[in-house]
Image (cartoon, rainbow, N blue to C red; front, side, top):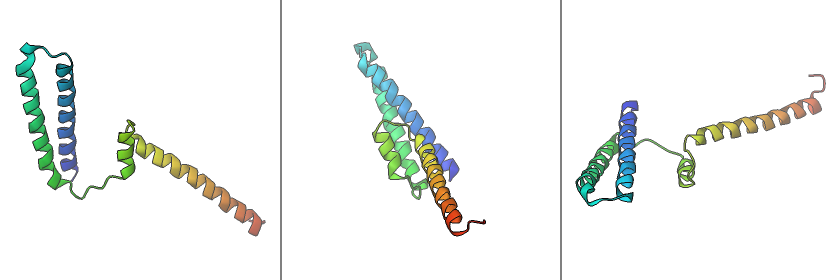
Length: 110
């Protein structure tokens, strides 16, 4: 499974880089750049086809909806894990505080 994910990740990175380059070409388009533009568009189609081929290998992959919300908000999706860990640590501290309070109340000699 990890090689399938790595393959998908590699294809996505190539696609994203191609789109970035395509944006640069289009933003300052010159008629002599038409051939390069056509090549980049053809590459984009090829990368989309490669990404589509990967779908059967990663169908059981589940991504939390919050990750997509991070992306929609322009945030780095890798921060999702960090934020989840911070929330879990904070919740753990709150629960530990409650447990300690109950211990003091119900088991004063403990």
